[in-house]
Amino acid sequence: VPWRATILTLYPEMFPGPLGISLSGDALGRGTWALETRQIREHGIGRHRSVDDTPAGGGAGMVLRCDVLAAAIDAAAPADDPRPRILMSPRGKPLTQARVRALSAGPGAVIVCGRFEGVDERVIAGRGLEEVSIGDYVLSGGEIAALVLIDACVRLLPGVMGKLASGDEESFEAGHLEYPHYTRPREWEGRAIPDVLSGGNHGAIAKWREAESVRLTRERRPDLLVSCKI
Ligand code: ADE
Image 1 (cartoon, protein in one colour):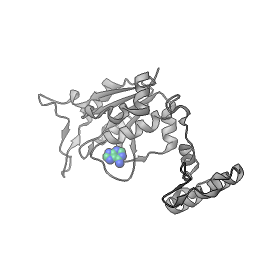
Image 2 (spheres, helix red, strand yellow; image 1 turned 60 degrees about the horizontal axis):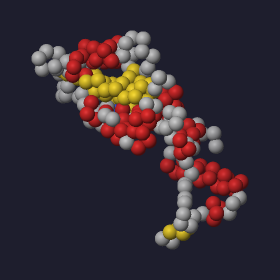
Image 3 (spheres, rainbow, N blue to C red; image 1 turned 60 degrees about the vertical axis):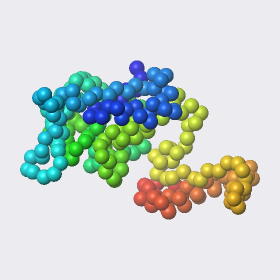
Image 4 (cartoon, rainbow, N blue to C red; image 1 turned 45 degrees about the vertical axis):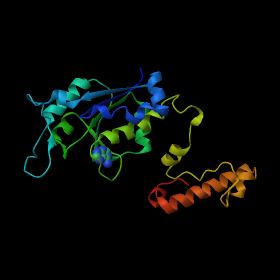
């Protein structure tokens, strides 16, 4: 059975979007993974299929109804569906490469895309939703965040990256940034490739790369060095 993402959204037209091309799109076509979208509005209330209402206690914006979202979740994923249920939300736990690796190694994910000002808190607890954020900024909805999460998972599935397997995610998990990369030409617009990379001394090259990795991490992400192994 392929890795399977089920997306609950008010905008199913946003999928597969960029996941339908390149590496992830080819893998989708080969059946390495599967994507399903479910329209939350199909479970809306009344003739107008309402999905939201004004916030209890007053204030701006609208809140996604718990009964509507629960019905959509129950129709999309039975209680014994082993996949984690994720709510994309800027107040969620920040997504990490470690969480991506764990999700990618599992059966897939049921992903709820929030819209409006939020989701009625009761359905988060009532349906065991894990809130996940892709960063400290606010998107207009969870759809683009869901695309990011799925892309990160799918590229790790067996056979998706082929020989392109990269050390980038390993360096991230180890808590440092990747060293700089170069290719031909050896000199370009007055900038040369560092001599050590053309010297054929693989020990020296490894040392240079580790030093560069530490330098970049110290400059850009000192927060990573606190728990770093190098
Ligand atoms: N929805 C809106 N902003 C988001 C974010 N930063 N991460 C996940 N979901 C979101």
